[in-house]
Amino acid sequence: MKRYIKNEKGSQLIEFLAVFPMVVMALLFIWQVALVAYTVVVAESAARDGARVASVGGDYGAAVDRSAHGLEVSSSLSEGTTSYGKEVTVTVNATVPSIKIPLIGRFEHELKANASMPKEEEEED
Image (spheres, rainbow, N blue to C red):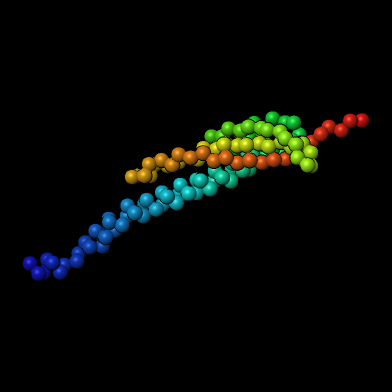
């Protein structure tokens, strides 16, 4: 009996099987964080592109959709006046793509990005 108790054959496999789910969970968590970072960068870029197009009177919604290709986004435009003159602000709401992490579920979140640009005025002759 003592011979079987001191036998350590297969102990590495048991340790690996105990740790493997935690490694998988850590990798899925890291992937989800990368998706959030990607969404932040793309939403801010789409807001800037939309504001740039809106400042010259173009279709800001199409610019936002092209810039945020692959993400679910909605955008809105507001105009205001500052001490520098008129400006346009584009707000982009982007839904973060998520993966289903076992025991935790899905990460449901929406990010908001704003960008403002001075409004280009047409010069009169």
